[in-house]
Image (cartoon, rainbow, N blue to C red; front, side, top):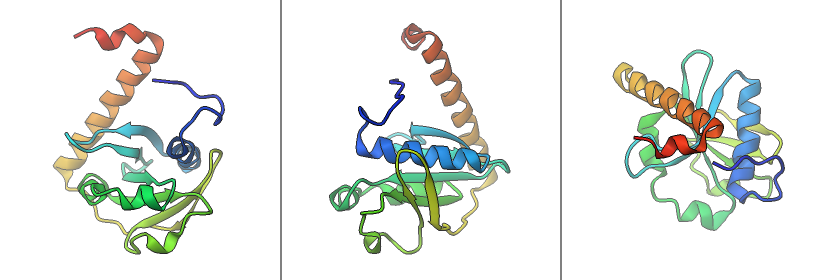
Length: 152
């Protein structure tokens, strides 16, 4: 895992994710970038809220990036709310209106459209929160001890 102190060496989607995570942290959320809820899926940001709510945010750097994403609707079953995060130049009219929308940069974000809530079933919520906690703990351990990922 690379630790970025500036946006100079980050990809456009990572820059958006950083701003999204900063904004959500101000709202009491804990975030993980590049999280795998199930085999074959990788969300850009998953956020665990102060009341146990789970949000998934997909960061799109441009029209082509959005149009090439054919998996996003598979993320809906892993969250209570689903959002797109884009920059100010993105043509937001191409995004599905039944999803949430954040405008972001590398430093912050703003929720322009709240995503509708579709609450997860209790068993799914428990499984995703456990996976979230395990993933976060492993990432923290790997930052302290990079060789830890090679054990087991």
